[in-house]
Length: 109
Image 1 (cartoon, helix red, strand yellow):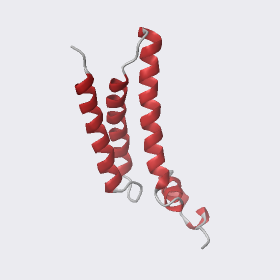
Image 2: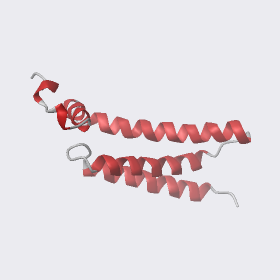
Image 3: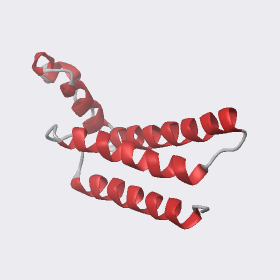
């Protein structure tokens, strides 16, 4: 079965049409991988940034902050119709809650 071409979409409506097209072609995998990459980049940036500045890094803090950032990005993506499924949004929120619980469980007083 041939893929739909980008020429069939009206790209003049905005840049989000290209992202919807890519997401449709990949069967919804593009946005999921995009959110995972945002989570990993933010988490590792916070961890290694702390490790370089303080000499030690707090991985659980990076996980919690990355969860919040990913929820914010996913909320903006949910505003575009056809870009993010509600199941994916629910998983992003669940991962953020688990990240916060992980941070609170490993916090040293």
